[in-house]
Image 1: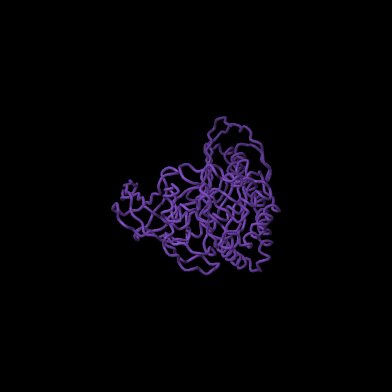
Image 2 (image 1 turned 90 degrees about the vertical axis):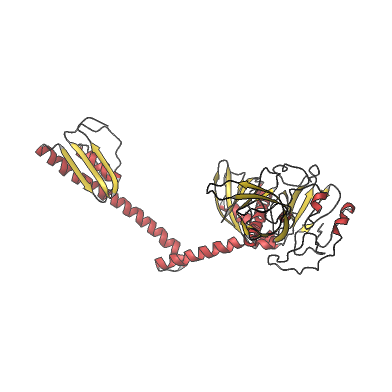
Length: 443
């Protein structure tokens, strides 16, 4: 059932919600700008991911930081409970100095709370600041260890710090990660392809699916269905389950190590997947997903895509390139492909003609040099050209050695007869290639 607007709270947890409720939010399709405090709980869920509290074997958690103690999951961060919370006040738990290749002092800081997501599960780390000092990286030592914030400033243990997340980077990762769940679900529902791995890159995201090849029609079908589901405004919800109580319909490549409940991300009734990453609250916030390329990945196929703002960035880049090509070819955009195809065909024909003329020139030069060397009994023959290729060198050497060559035809490699003189031929200006051959039998 759709639980938006309704909270079912386990009796043991009611004491955690003694603070007044914050005022209701108004729905907007733009990224959520309200920053809830750790203990506030909006009465409606139109602008935040759906939250469920049910029976003792199924937990859910969004805003209340103290709830983590009650569900025995100290590794869960605020960014995993509320991806829209951009800042928080935290306490420094520990500081460990870490050496660096540059010699600068770096420190791994563990905080009581954090809105900065540590790298893990295919999702890169968030960027942000601690009291204005940049967080250079964020990661865990061990999959169940605490989040380590790498900074160049040494904080005092017990100090109170303001944690800020780079929202543009965070929201981009939220869009790409939710899009990955959606593309994975649709690919499985349509074609039963499993996703065996994924990676969130700086400009594109990819998944590896269990099929040796994806046709253009299959690609178009996946993209069409994915974007239809985006338009359906499916709710994205976080739910925490005890490790031995995961529903059968949950997709998982293995339960994460550690103790405490397992976090499941649901996209409407379409998909349920174990995941610790950050996600948008609704598929509408993805705006659009574009599948951009496929490539072989051993026995699987790697599928590349972009979502949200990255689609707009790609469209802008493509439009800029299209205008530049139109100017270069002095034509309309719709004729660019035709003219580029013709240019490539003409270039290949020119290369073939050039290669034939180069062979003819090498044969002509070689015959003249050989005749001159034999008639005057020279012991050394040299020749240099500023412009030439390795094919020119080989043809010239064959001709000087008395091996007949046919212009434009590839000859099988054969033993060269002995020479009566030294040959040194080279091509290139400043740097290039050369061949030197002595008057002994060689091959």
